[in-house]
Length: 164
Image (cartoon, rainbow, N blue to C red; front, side, top):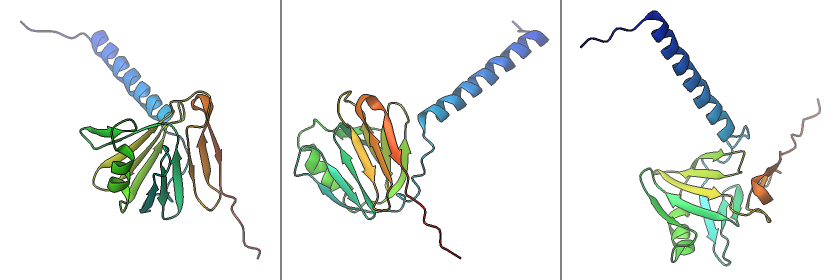
């Protein structure tokens, strides 16, 4: 049995493919914010403060304080999350000494993914509608906070221009 495609059928398929391509592009745009995280790439994790129930990850030049749900995964499996036994201890053991390779931020809800060397990912997921969820800072004035309801606020470092 042969299937014959008419010219109008081919045009319809092309329209559908263009629509799907446009939809995929919009999803990518909606997912990732335009904030520049390039100064985090290459930084090493110096410490993970686990004295409280909320981890604070200290990088070479900045820190991430997490007050919401988080999980650690590789490319194939979720390894553990906030509510797993000894999760904070495992987080410290797994992250200290690793290097950040990429930081991705979704605008809404304001979720954060930090990719480390050897395909390890820390995903920080907004989970509270009434209090701060997490914040990422650098000493130069970079401050990104995921506030109540999954919205974020961002302060950029002030660039100082040299006088000529």
